[in-house]
Figure (cartoon, rainbow, N blue to C red):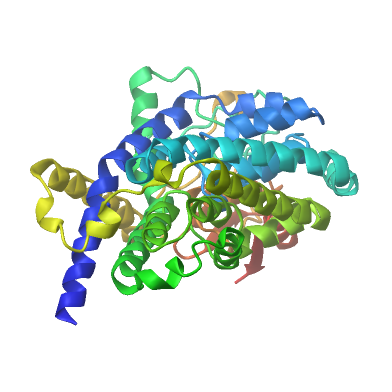
Length: 466
């Protein structure tokens, strides 16, 4: 037992050391991407119901650092802004499979060929899925279009309705420069240093809160596979390439794993005999399809869209996986030596390895402490607007009430922000605070509870009055 634990610890250290500098670099670029790429660009280019919008959605989604739980409310928001079903499906497929953070981590542990093929596979699979939905799921789009036409644009919970997509509330918070929940994106006229600070806060706090736990889980599972799974198990079916992929699909589809957390697991499986093509299937299907996201996609976009969404991911993953296994020499896809030497080579770590591991550990600890140390805020500040004179003076309603709602399905800060935005748009809501860790929304104002429940349901979550 002592030898097993020692080998497990050594493997975990080696994998973390290999990924740490590339993860930090990837999170850094992800933060810059979030802060300096206007969100309005998504809405402007994804509305037409044609192949051009599908291609744009895939191209935009590939570098974005959103996990599968975070991409759901984002895509729902895009749909409510007028994006086509095909573009939304393309975005849903491409975004969770990759991201600048996961691409850099893929390069660190799986080499340049995998780092190139992974985003390319996500891009073409997403375009295929978007085309399929535009072609064969028109009824689903017609049904959701009716909901879009009958709804209103989001408005500020201070009572000001937005008549134009580009118009944003001039509400402000005194805490950390956060904007009102009705604000669609960060103001583009912010000072450069402020936008950079917001980028780093997103990268090393919010993203780590969302991805960190799955990254840790992925590393723990990968280290366990490295030291506990006999090499003979997967090596016995190595020559049966399609069987490898079907086994991986059976494991990957129901489980949740983020694009970054899937990497060490795929590396460990390859080291035990899994084919490179099957490893790619895991990298694609694991982040893009899981039981939680399938339920939400089916509810929001329709059953036929869900079927085509799953079909596209599975077919795309198998086609690219078979392409890797049959068209390229297996030597192109040799994984990092840590997967095989990790249990015996922890003493090989140098000073820089320990530095990057320590930095990543501190960043993870800071993100988790921020999330759980302030449970009533879910890691963020209150979303109580103090509106400017352009909105008119606001007075509290005499019939104002306070209610708490249990919200099921939130998994990350993107989910939390989407729920806050949806509730804030309900008539009569004066104040809303959502706790991600507790799964509770605290709402003040003379509002209709059924309207709150419906607003949350419309974006794919479930709410009940406590």
